[in-house]
Length: 355
Image (tube, rainbow, N blue to C red):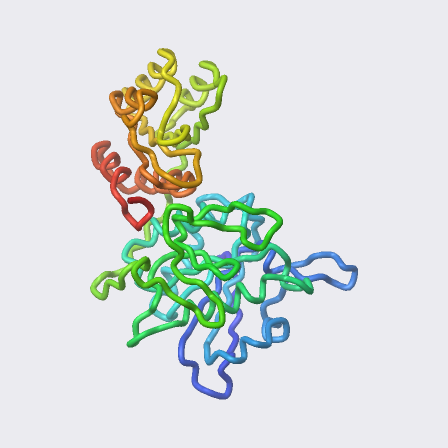
């Protein structure tokens, strides 16, 4: 049974559509309206032209695939990522671009995961959402949705301008696996501290072509679903105890840990701490070092407090975000067979997620 319902909308009528866009509605604030009792309820996308009449300015065939069970983004899990990737796989040849409407809390995790799962992607997949419901008077939902659709349908010489997984939010187009949610009450919810903005929407949409992934005409989409979940995030803090670290590293079936360290990759040099990490690595548990800082990157060995990590085999995550690191680790553990290949894949950029 399909986990979604399809709704077809012709914004071009009576003209012939120039492009076809698939909107995947997973849930989240954007798709909410107020009912007669002034309670928020899910929006019926059959009425989208009434709520967003400016969509009639586009000559598009728009199909909305709404999840039957809408998800609060706090409840998103890898199974939902597989559903999203599966929809894109099923309709990849029929549509020119894809919009994923998603809650903001875990959007960066989902955009990162989908970027890894869609190998050989050559079409735009734009995640967007809103801080206020589409039914609210001051909502950011309409502008986010309209511009995401425009970007997803933009072509030059019959090729998409954007051919990667992105987030569009508050006038900015960001690489999905470089993004991070940084704001819960203002409209500028996302930043990409370690990578340039891909486009900025003002009176016109100005693309940063040097930062966009290049279109690869000879690639074929391969969707890598069913990714492993035997991973953990270990955030370092002053006073972290041996019991806590041992507890995380002793999780049954654990295969990988993203360790959030200070600054450029620094961590305690206590003998017990280094020994616990060393024991975990000896059990073939991958440990990937990322920085707690918004900007900058991990440079293991720059200071004495990271030299020991380098010596025992902790992997440097360079300038990758935590969101991209944990989803990349899930992907790598699922689709690289040997430990050596898994380590190599974590070190090198796969989808532009790190230097």
